[in-house]
Length: 440
Image (cartoon, rainbow, N blue to C red):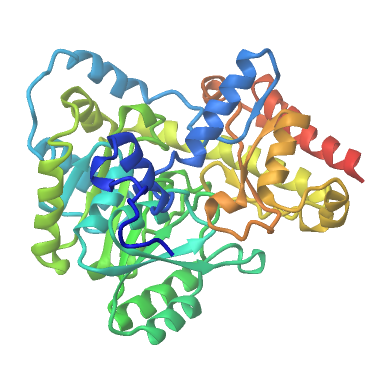
């Protein structure tokens, strides 16, 4: 024990330089603000390509299709627009968004309750931040950013584990059990269908059961419907059709319009939720992004205006994505990689469980190790199931089947998988299957 007159050799924290103060503070923090896995895999793929290596890019979920051409023309026409627009969004755009979703989703969007943001990603975070203390109910698997956003917003992220047998869908029983366990806490269910990372959606009956449980327990639902217009049969069912008074819906241009880099998202907050939540959303917007880029908002008015050309553009995307997704799922299933055929979007969520013993013999026991070895040894970039909230030992991965020439396939006719523009996807899936056979 140190004597009373022995000098204190420990540094005074008040005299530490800022770098050490930051290090000490971060050591006590979680990883909520680390870079997104989806963005990291994109950078890793680029690095390997710069070294001359062949990479099949199934990791980053970016639309392979060109932006809807009339919207590009409008963007060019307004390139010189420089004024700040209203925080809530350009009135003409809010009106057009409300009209558009009212038609395609058969749900009553009100222009006065639409918020335009710099991508739906930031709108999702803003909503979580605008809430009082709440549980954010997040399916596992689900998009990589939901849980970190909940923690960054000061909320409690609650994982609800789904399984292959439930088609990776959270069930009404999941929600019921959590609501009964903690009835007093406000709850927000994040609902993404067709989903990332699975490409799947619930049946109409399953969705209605979820809505019934949410209504009975007063659960707020955040319906992330960014892939809704890419439901392969054109049969997306908006969650707000079943729970209009309690569903906040988000969408945007990144997936169905191919304009991820434009960073434009939209949100509808129904009148039934009152004025306070909406006011707080606008308050966050005014203190952060101020307004979305003026030329992009003008271009979005064109994108959200239904025409025969727009309908044909969306329909051809759905046809292409459906055929490729069905082919990929069938090829993987034939190799004993359990894979549900997709309902929409451009993702698959393969499960390598059948190959566990052979993979373990090669030192592969986690999804992260599985994707690392596939990238290094087969040149296939995927994301591990653990990035989407799954148990690290679960041998699942997300496969974004977007490594094809979208512009060529938009203009093509006939069988998609026979087209040269799809060749890279075929080669990439074959590379996975060949690698698996080498592990046996």
